[in-house]
Image 1 (tube, chains in turn red, purple):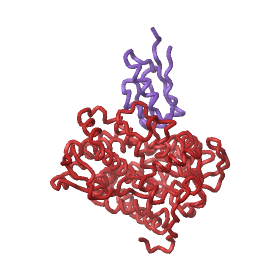
Image 2 (cartoon, chains in turn yellow, blue):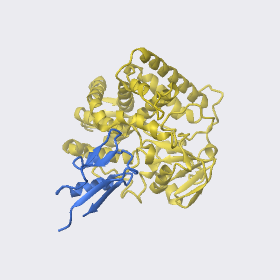
Image 3 (cartoon, helix red, strand yellow):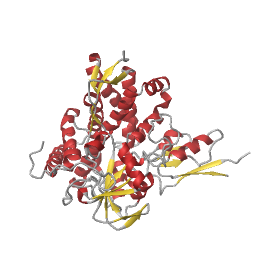
Image 4 (tube, chains in turn blue, purple):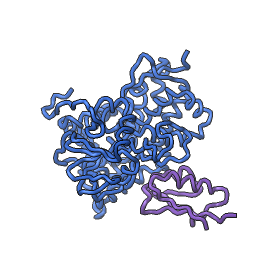
Length: 406
Length: 69
């Protein structure tokens, strides 16, 4: 636990999900789907006094309205936390609103197109096989700790041009920012400072020796005024790429494997009909969307008929939107050949995840390589699956046994 | 006999999810920012009508229009 003086008291358990929800409650972490169904049946927008006041849209339509409304909802804070300290560390474009958002986003888009991802794919395939080599002879592994955790972090390190061996450091920072940081401002600030110092060193090194990587690309990029970006902007975007690119996809790959470990019929189908992989990936993204974002209400408005007032945050749950039965027939079922799937796992509107093509490629490759080498596997009945708390949901511990059950 | 189909991607709505390109690469292309555009004048070649409708029904931004000429 943290020894920081800024650590806030534990949250009391929730007894009323509709009027007093809390996304850090252990029951939410364990299984949020029935909770979201209960909230959605009550209202398209619910509110809690926790987190200094926070709304949550529960339907796809309400989530879409908010995601598209940059006039009333700001992205300057993108995590719902116990505290709202003054904003010091920006991470453009995720924390940007119009008009600053578009130029900051356009700088990042070309390196993440599907064609750019094809060039990275062989390295990701090799990473997956290197990881599997380490545990396949054991007949079992913790698939979250030994496999899914390491794939996105090594891929993004490769893109940024920083050593893949520093991965454990990045994972520590992300845990401090996205999980501990909800309740512990000291842990969050410490991680942000450490990351900033780390990247500042890499930027400095490239000033004399430019390299063929994403850090150099950002350093050479020009802002809308035609001038190079200042170091603060480059550092902010690098922080974003590292934070946003790692535990999100780690979670998505992990949840997909969790489903496949429990569903032999889908596993067999994907092996026999590999052409189903693209629709299966989209369905895993819908059913197990890892990422919940946030907005801050700037002006009073109405969402799906519900009044929404400034001073409150919004827990923008794309995962809950993707389980809305009004949008998706059999929303609670995983249908790997679902034909119509307008899921919002990567967000909607101008903040569509810049790394969506990277995430899809990593998920596809990670599942394909796993199924090639370990076509049969199941959750270890003697083990426990542990899910992450907070803003990104995925398995952080997932013991599995290889081979068919006896 | 119904008329020919035509597709169009609304550039104000497209956010580059790239679902259309993945589902119907014969009909859509991506620009350097990853945003989608119809190929050519958007006329859907015979036999690809289902793919045009499939792309439309999977676009999260509802940015694809399919019209019958």
